[in-house]
Figure (cartoon, rainbow, N blue to C red):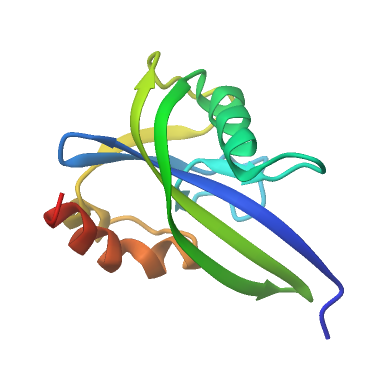
Amino acid sequence: MTIGRMDVVAGIILRQERFLVARRSRAMAFPGFWEFPGGKVEAGETLGEALVRELNEELSIAIDAFSLWKVKEKKIKGVAIRLYFHLVTDFSGTPTPREGQELAWITCEEARGYSFLPADEEILSELSLCLQTR
């Protein structure tokens, strides 16, 4: 039984052949897991507005160019979660962890050694193919 629904945006922030990942802090749900930065879409926000806000709040960056790449749906504890993964190809500022998270710029090959949240883990092989064709 589904109790509710939540929309979540995630930014796959690209820099040459690497992308930025964040390790969830102890204060967050699923501490220690790696993920693509982002968060919940608030009422009245577009996906783009939510992505811009979340990446500014979490990382102190302003994103200048991005595009929706993948949509995944998960059900967790009765909540239907729709995750919108965006490729971020241009940003300004230096990513700075503002929520106690650890940051790393990694390649798809290096990602194999990281423990990702399940939805993020699922798209890594697709991301590898995507980046090879860029």
